[in-house]
Image (cartoon, rainbow, N blue to C red; front, side):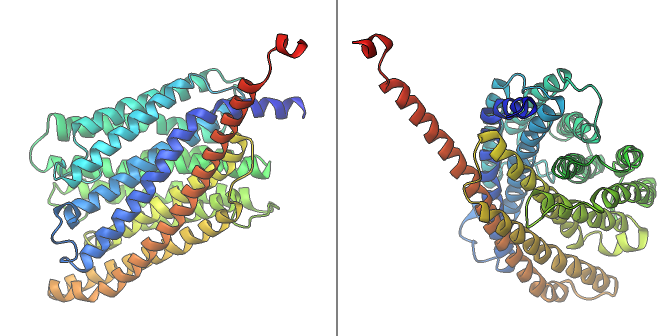
Length: 472
């Protein structure tokens, strides 16, 4: 093994213990979140199905499912991948390794408190911010602890030049504490009154789902594309321009055209939606130039995950931009079209990219191959097919809903007409659930194998004869 390989082996080993609790908990919460999403979908089809159990009513189980997926899976899994990428790009072992271990347990405890609180009816009532104060405080503190370890590793980097993934991931580390603390202060701790509450919640939801997930997903995807192909990111100036314009314009979108707010707010959101074409073109050029002519065998591996994820992000980008247009936004802004764009952002883009990163880092960090390598390709197909079956029917149903509402059709008749699309989307959720089980199986099988190896090493050391006994 050459010196460079030994260096990276030591870097990967330093991430082993800190990353496992983050990824293991994230895998569990994704399974739970998707299971709750299926329950929510079934209860929407048939309200009497769980009518005798107040914990599984649609108004409780849906936000519990959404928050379990975002806060239980997306954010801790994203932070785990950020720690690994920072250590690798810094050419330095992970600093403060005990901090992420403690923070992971605090984070998952906060998610548990929040999900249980929603199911028992103690929700704040604000979309994507339903956790009560106790859970929110734990999440905020845990995020700061993990960010401290990441920033310490970044500050100790041997390679001082910043790479494009640095820009996106560093911004994400600062972005979440800002939006999460602001939203909690103005909506939960010292709530403002009136329509301002809805405006702040729209702002937070857009910045969490589209901006934060976009920053992390793009940073991770660009790292995977370059590290696996061993080819630098093409069009760095386009990437730099796309990064800043993405941050500048996408933070303003998200106000529905039909919202009962001062007219300048939807107008500003419309302008930002039009200007989103600028970062879209820049990021699409970077992606196309980077993957063009690269001879990497895909077969459902991490490189395929990154490519599919960025392609899904660009489609989600277009869907969000079109939603900001006045006519279409007024038609589809309060229909199933909005959840369709959100689900594409979460599952089609972010989750698939993070899956690819985990499949890339896990064998390196643990020092042995994946326990179920065939699950990787199967899981990739599950998420591609599941995302398509989830997003496409909801988007079609949403457009149809909007057109029928504008035509004056009765709401009950419109709802009845969308049931077929919702049933197909439930099938998509079931396929996604299967993919999450395959992902969790690999993580826990490898974790158990690693722990058994530790026990075997410990037993060998205990049973080994002492030096004096060997001489006797």
